[in-house]
Image 1 (cartoon, rainbow, N blue to C red):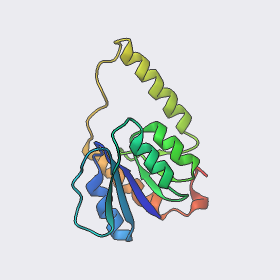
Image 2: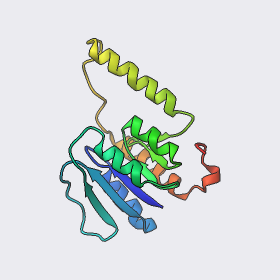
Image 3: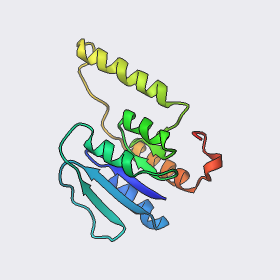
Image 4: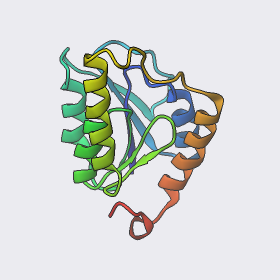
Length: 152
């Protein structure tokens, strides 16, 4: 098991580092701009070319079944689920085969509302409760036997 982080604007990198160290898991951050990472041989950084889906494509190319992907990107979550990865949003909400289609539909609806001017703001700022939920769910996802996960 390895953890991949869609690292552009990821607010929970430090939390991932702590949990990964506890379980002795490798972490790879992927982004199209430089990100400082801890000096730790279990943590690596992959700088990809600029482009809307370059980081996503790199993660999907490398991820394997039962790896963990941390992302707020719903289309990336769907692609990783197809490869049987465990996917967790940055607020602690797991992406599953049962909820990914609803998440994609909601994303599309919100995009249309933003384009029409009905919605002018973005997502709410990351709250302390989000980090707490994220830590709990990350721990659960890492420890869950594959057959117990509802997205298989």
